[in-house]
Image 1: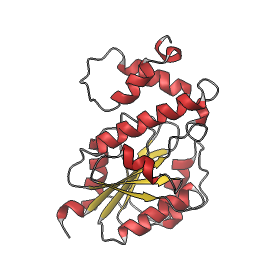
Image 2 (image 1 turned 60 degrees about the horizontal axis):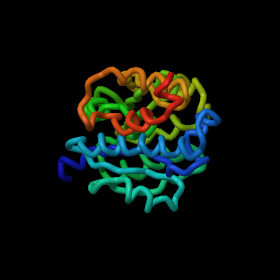
Image 3 (image 1 turned 180 degrees about the horizontal axis):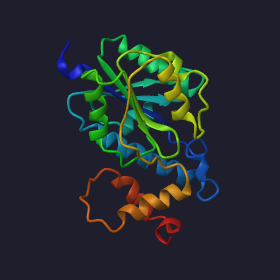
Length: 233
């Protein structure tokens, strides 16, 4: 197998439809604005991942009829496929099961809720996995979840009976990994943007900085700058 295809980075993403994404922003923002904001998240994530060297790139999308949307959003070089499973844990496991069976030596899955997440952390996950310093790599979020999970072989138990969308997601998962005797490494903690307060924090963190035109998170920041509820806080 060609060296560049030994590792795979998968973005998990939802179609940015009003009323279907970023619902925790209601009623501060309308479903239309929340969906457009999430579209910016996706554009930032796709742009950053598109410059990740030495790894194959993919987007696992939902719902299953959203392929056309992601064909428009994604640049060349992204494999597109629909997520399979009844809940998040099942969908994550199915991605690992399918892609690691294709002889990728390491697969990392990253979410689309942290638009300023740098590709250096994604690359670090592969370095830890391929050097066999870790069986599993997680990227922790401040809210108790995780923005990235990487593996060299599937471990379905890590996705069973997890209290998804709670502050205990990572802690419960880490306890499962400990009981299984797996070596786990954690990346730097990062913030995902789920609430109005998260958006304010993100905007305030970058508004005074001198940044290049295409910095990681620029599309999200530009959109937030045009929202009066954000820019006047």
